[in-house]
Length: 426
Image 1 (cartoon, rainbow, N blue to C red):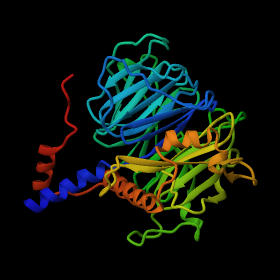
Image 2 (tube, one colour):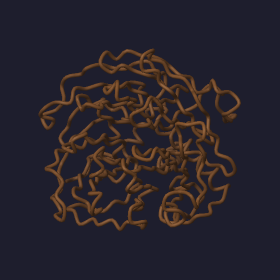
Image 3 (tube, rainbow, N blue to C red):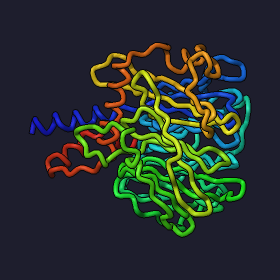
């Protein structure tokens, strides 16, 4: 019994490791990085760090942040995570407009294109919706509660996306499926019409993103998974259009000896706005892939592999600005085993991502320069050994969180008694 307790304690510790996240304003007015419970924002217009003002009617963030996102309008920013708090910020004043208290830990967030609704998913597979009353500058609004929108029935939701026209909301989960749900006219009453399921992945799904062009505005859905693939979907029918094996770029990926070389986890997908291209990151790879989608033939192909030289920089999150086409990348983690430091991050930027002349910018050429790096990283120089340790910790944490495990009855009962994500009293 004692050995069982130790194993569960070790598992819970692994789950506390959180990857560093990055998100850039659609017009590149600011950049945000989340490391553990620390949310760092840099104003690229004023070239200065941002002081967050949180006087909303709710507690302050303490747990690791698991999801950050700018609204398509650039007016709102959402952060959420292990502390069961969803915070909605104004990007003009960087004051917290709303604090929503979730019943469970939050794993993903999405914002409707008209800024009227924020959706968030919890660790137990429930998607909640909050209706916003508009953006009110200079006035702190009272805390709101989410209304249940839909449920995946105890399967961790890993990604949430609104379709480009706002007609559907997509939710992907640990159990290999993507649900396409019609977003109702009265969301607070729940979403009851399922448009389709996108089925085909053979491992947990990690990320989703829409690729669209001015000619094909509705676009198609890309999804990444622990099964070494990026897949392309028609969400209206749920049809699988194409599958791209990321391990086909043999020689570019150094696989972990403890895993079969064919099993590589896709960790993030970032589509380039108004183009047929997407940047893709995978675990253990020091760089990014560029995928091209043939919108007429409905096929995916790898057009470019960009390796990042020097230090062990393995991106944990990527984001692109619609206006500048710069690809922002962050590598890092929080709560590293054996480390006294709460967390660290390293930021890099790739310019001209769509062209043959793409290049990794030096620190002095990144927008905001070393001043930005000092704000988003905490310190500019980061030891290579720490970068490597973070990459391995993130890999282990993702595996522990998303790979389904079989437990004995005794261990299952112990986990029920000791879990720390029970419903809180509101």
